Length: 257
Ligand SMILES: C[S@@+](CC[C@H](N)C(=O)[O-])C[C@H]1O[C@@H](n2cnc3c(N)ncnc32)[C@H](O)[C@@H]1O
Image (tube, rainbow, N blue to C red):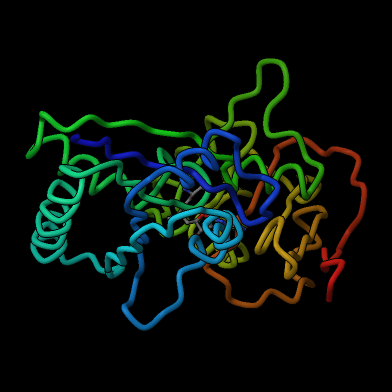
């Protein structure tokens, strides 16, 4: 019987932050698609669901799909078309679950493949299982509200054109920077031109909900003194207002470390 192509959000890292619906889908799917940026690099998403897959009675087929992080649109399109054909062929025999960090509908590799499958194989059933996104997980780790009352919150990638960051910052109360938010020091001059000030609250959360989690929270004026190391898995939250801070710096650690 033909199956469904399911985008499964597996949350930000903590295995307890995977939904019951995601667990059910991962235990039942014939094939688990694992996106990778490089064939030789381990998949963080797969690591996060290994304990669930280990509980299965019959092992699923693990299908690694490589999506290199390049801006070569032509080559990327070719890869999505190839991968869409593989997914469509596998889905003829049962459910194919594509695991994705956080939520599948937010800046995820799944979206490229999903659009391609939708367009090329309109007969294929599609389903999306939402996940806890790194945006809300980072806000929880930093203990900073993302938006209250009439506040406007804007989410953007860190490599956005500085003019667009400036424009967006003017119209928002709170900003969330994703994808390499460790570049936050570079954005401060832009933010100071857009209604933020030295007392505005800022948080940088790396590897949130994982053992290696690091949280820095303070005022914009503190950021210069922060020791920030490069990490793709970081989210920055900046608030125009100054809010009470619970702590300045911490590392999560894990019980079994
Ligand atoms: C391609 S986007 C995927 C976003 C994901 N779909 C989500 O809902 O969180 C990758 C970016 O998500 C953020 N991210 C994902 N997991 C994270 C984590 N555990 N800690 C911090 N940032 C994370 C980082 O900004 C990273 O550069």
